[in-house]
Image (spheres, rainbow, N blue to C red):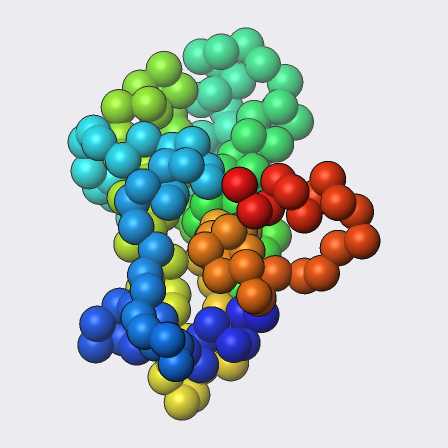
Length: 164
């Protein structure tokens, strides 16, 4: 399904082109699907940090086990801002996680949508072979907004939820 969407993506307009017309993911879609805030401070900051330094800082500040910190950081990185391996977090997002209480003030939904659009634009280049970004968001959006692309399920409960 991702390949079909990539083939239909037009970087000039940031939309998917289908025989019936164009469509695009919106901030409302991101807010509904992922529950992320779309209003708030822009996500900016230093682009380099150290995972070990952040882990130590979180352990000292919140007195939580290192595994707990790693799990939160990995969920944040792999679901929202995953790299091409799908298993690591890009360093540029780690400094933003220093203040767990202040995380809600950022517009994560906007950032996630921008990251997806940038990933889609990059993957349309001839020399690009892999895609990073919030693929869970892309797939969920496609299943909801483009039901003809969704996997067919024999379970009527799953089907009825997807068609709401």
